[in-house]
Amino acid sequence: MVILLFGPPGCGKGTQAVSMARSMGVPSISTGEIFRAECKAGTKIGKLACEILRSGGLVSDEIVNQMVAGRLSQDDCRNGFILDGYPRTKAQAEFLDRLLEEQRLPAPTVIYLDVPDSVLVARITSRRQCPTCSAIYNLLHQPPRHAGVCDNDGTPLIQREDDNEQTILARLKAYHEATGPLVDFYATRDFHRIEGDRTPAEIHAEIEQVLEPALAHAGEPRRG
Ligand SMILES: [Zn+2]
Image 1: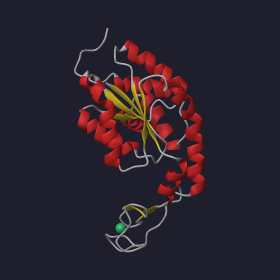
Image 2 (image 1 turned 45 degrees about the horizontal axis):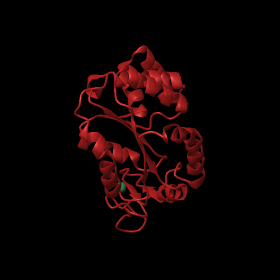
Image 3 (image 1 turned 30 degrees about the vertical axis):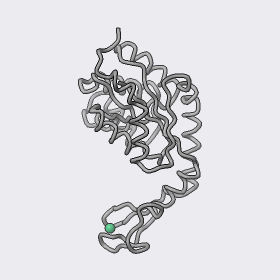
Image 4 (image 1 turned 120 degrees about the horizontal axis):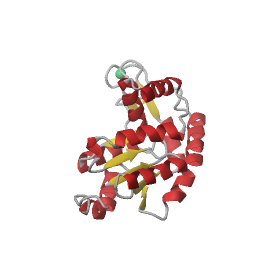
């Protein structure tokens, strides 16, 4: 089966993608990973990917689509895959529809991990890091044993520059602008909104429940 995992930055979808991939035995694929792999491979498109990674710049739909299509044509995707954070725009979603049809793969099941902005802001601004060993803490649900210092080495914890409210709000605004039309695009299809303001285990359990009927058919041959 083909699963698309959506959710705002900081919603925990990376964690879910990993646990879903493990329980379903299919790869979890993110565009960041594809870029890094292409860059390492040194192909023509890979050189472009390296440049993009270096500049941290925006990538055209065309390039992203081309790289995703290449990745999805690999052997390990034959029995399905999880796409983590792709498509990101409506143009990418339309491309993916065509690609799935060409490859005779099933229509996607969409999981939308929804977390209110206020919760995300609270979560991210509560993040602290140890500048010595890079351990990450969260004052809300994973605080250090002694306030303000690292469990491992006692170094005073710091807040990363990007983890401030202004930066997060700007990222969320960009996310909602890009993803709003996508939610509309998929809303009438196999679309499942999951309440994301819960523990990873609770979220995982609900996703499994949602996917159960579809997974029952996953062993069947491709359509067409
Ligand atoms: Zn430390």
